[in-house]
Image (cartoon, rainbow, N blue to C red):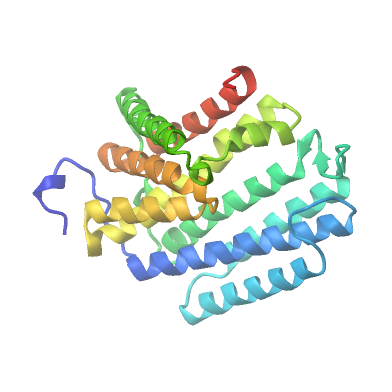
Length: 301
């Protein structure tokens, strides 16, 4: 149980625990791998450059899907939400390749949006599907258990902006420190600029996908599901650290782990302090949107 140090926080009382969090995180990663692998493999079959080639991508996708559903069956977890997420994700990517055109560099775009960004968004939505499947469906918990609680006024959102600015300051200090120490391998990747470059500068679509859909889905999983599931067993402080660390690991790139860890701490604090997932979604979306706008309009070189 949380001690008096956290009495001013809103501690969600949920039915799931650390083992459920580990299972959900594992299944989520396997489904993400499946969408990436199968979608990428189809892309190469369609004649486009992807990070995953055929036929290896199909084999990896089938293997990861099989492992995910074996785990779900072994632990009596809901199958249909995960299946819908998987089929929808693969379907969106495949259709995008079918209807896509060559950007001129061998990669695909659909309606002016790189299929790579579409695939990343489809994979992000998997987080929301898994978080809801392991909470609302499996435990028949209300949506409020994962943070869908109405807020009053602008104060929670102003608070979220303030905490985000603190986290952003920490990130800027971290990047400057790495530059001073000449540790290039840990410098955060410019994912916003990369997304814009791939999108051919399509700012509206990039913000919708990167600044709205992705953050909302990730908050449902990491703050709405993972964080509360750890608190009962390991306490508030350690849960903030662990959930933020998992958030960082899911971004894979070594340079992204520390920045996303810091962002996760800020967003987790916002969630616990306001008692609602909405301000955390807002701050996360603001973070990504500002990064995209800076990459689009400001020359930081």
